[in-house]
Length: 420
Image 1: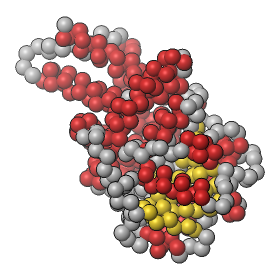
Image 2: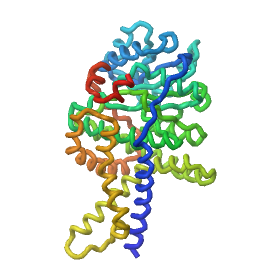
Image 3: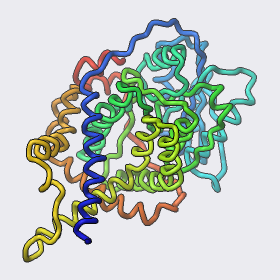
Image 4: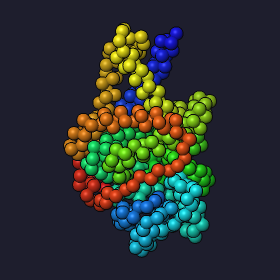
């Protein structure tokens, strides 16, 4: 009886995995985004910053040099509960607004964004759209041109391509880079290509201002980006992924910093999954909406990874213990012509994504240490499940000061160069 239940559970997760494998095939090809409209949309650029005096200046200088009419965008930096000189750095730049927020009982980017939007609506000038960045980012100079294009084409929520600013700093930042290249190419792009909703990534996000006024922000969990994505999809507003609108994000250099960041993500993901997964699933079934069913699977990813990891560990332990295996693996029942190619493809997805993305050759050597990074997700996810009620925001310290030209010179291939 137990063995049959174990097999049934394995089969469910094999089907979920097979669905994602099939979906990823639609990311092998991409059509370059086109810019056909003149700049007409006005933007409020919001930068969330907590003790970011080391890096925020480089981003402000970068944003002031965007290839978009300067009169059509303003720059606002949220100096959120800062105890350093972030605000002083921002005020050195004429025409850039530093908004200082001191609310120690409401820490976190979600609360800061909600506060800043209320301040923004009080200003005499109105904007067509709001774009959000993190203080450690660098932004391709044509980013707003792509956002203008998508807004004029009727999209109300757009997510840019999240690239890595410092993939060569350490094996940890390299692993993060590999993970993001995979997600951009084989998770986000396939969904865009087949007409599904995309998912917000916390930065490089553009929102129609009237939508934000109508919905309010209301996303104050540890993963405010996923929470707002869910709120949009439930209201039939489907975020769009713009592959050519690039944002370069600083990845943690040390394993400890990366673990803390990933723990926060998984805690927030479990929290959002607990609150939204079943309602999204029932809504998708009721409306016969593939988009919402796919979204429910995406929300389920934290549990998918947790349970899948436990199944894998259980099977390995069963085979390592003395005596004949007591549990059957579902793969032993699948035909070899199916099980072998699917298994190989799953293992080769990361190098495939890197090949498709034409990343710098130096990054391929980091595939040797990537399995260590991947396996470290298991204890992090396990611990996050039992601490998912944690609402305390953990700040990731940023210190890697680079300029856009330096980052792009290290980014091999026409894809990275043309996006600048």
